[in-house]
Image (cartoon, rainbow over all chains, first blue to last red; front, side, top):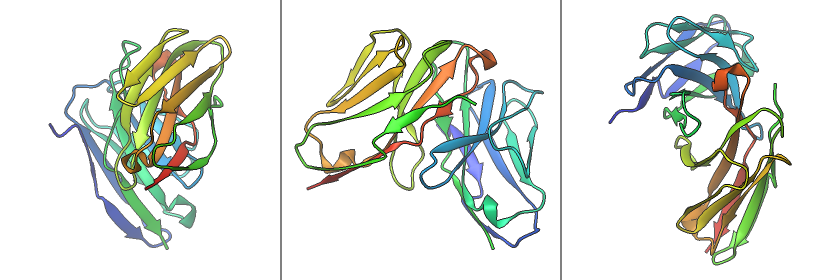
Length: 114
Length: 114
């Protein structure tokens, strides 16, 4: 019962460094999401993938890229990290067909850019 | 970008108090409204999915109502306990974006004092 697994859990980067956050789900969901959580701002959508092979920008995509590697995996890349990208990142997945579906979240990645 | 608002931003109550919070969302193109419970250092967990105007859901001491015509949902907690301390998020899904996007409010942070 792994659900949504994201790695790493913690990361410290220097300004300008790059890194990739990994996310995998084992629920055969079509849709996957990357959110960032900042104090007082709830969850803001960075990118989402409605299905394998498609990706779309969310509310705050600047500075990020994503890859939907296959149905299970959705990665988030920071090409040149900036202090403004210090945040907690959550990956989520859902099966959007059907109104009663819900989003399942990973445990989060706490990223600090110094 | 859709506007989903939650109030109050934070709430401090005594053990045994009953409380409620509000989620406001667009009254057009409604598809589903979700409530999540988010404990510190954990990932959000689904409480309710509501799809029909007038829906009422209940889980133990927590219940929720939905008014899609005026665009609001209330979450009620009866007899709050310290273990209810968490951030409560609502998320709106609309008929646009192929139902794929969850638009989250910024949450209501509840602190229940023993």
